[in-house]
Image (cartoon, rainbow, N blue to C red; front, side, top):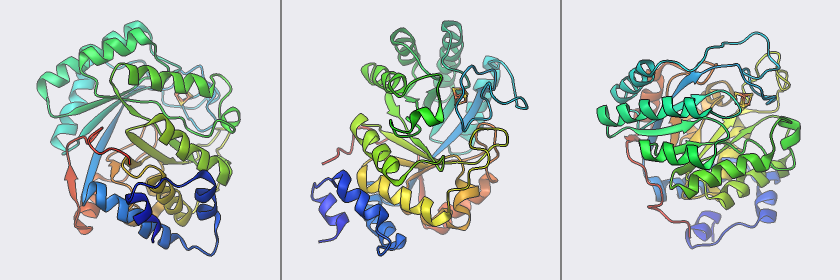
Length: 329
Ligand code: SF4
């Protein structure tokens, strides 16, 4: 019986089994992609979800995340305070015009002030009135219970807060907040019935075991949406000279995440273009979601290339959420 058939029959790979699969050099990556594709096809057919990022506040951050060009450690960076409501709602209009399903409003910083949350919620209320079909994801950093309640009341559908890396490797990535801080924010959002989006950044010096641990941590936290970022090294950051990824390794990582989180929205996130290069379309046979447009402070490819890729694959854009519709066996 194939791995995909076993998973479709309700089996869950054990961490040991996943490690063996991931590291077995005699198992070629395309075989893993093929197994993962069976699951992608079963749960998502030929649909692709599109997301668009708005960097609503940039730089000015107290934290020391080793991958981030907005960290306090970086001198040269794009800095601005929280942009006016009109600019946030204008971004939503652009998203709606570009067939985007989820508009992601992102703020730099450890976490939002109450005043910033009020600014975001006022913007979200306007967006929901103007574009009711557009799903809103907020990514504002560490947030508390009261802030989560306000976001939910304003109509925020989803909250992104990445685990980023494994619990073991976390201190190598950031020292100004803990792995548990991140888990707590995700749990706070879940408690307010906000769909949890949480993912990782691969290529920061983590081991194969760390990657297995991340995939299972996200399964355990029950993230509805899993952005898998591939490090796009930014000059001056701790990981600015890191060069650990190849397109085939990125594919293998995505396949692994699909095998461990078969029913979840798996998004090829930041670093897609520079790390997967010509294998982006192959990666969409495993993942079912991408960002269209630019990332926070790095550029994406022109939108049309993404729409062409989807069409060339014979895929179609999916506007809806399937959160909690498809249950893991
Ligand atoms: S990832 Fe967020 S919290 Fe970390 S340095 Fe960048 S902006 Fe600050």
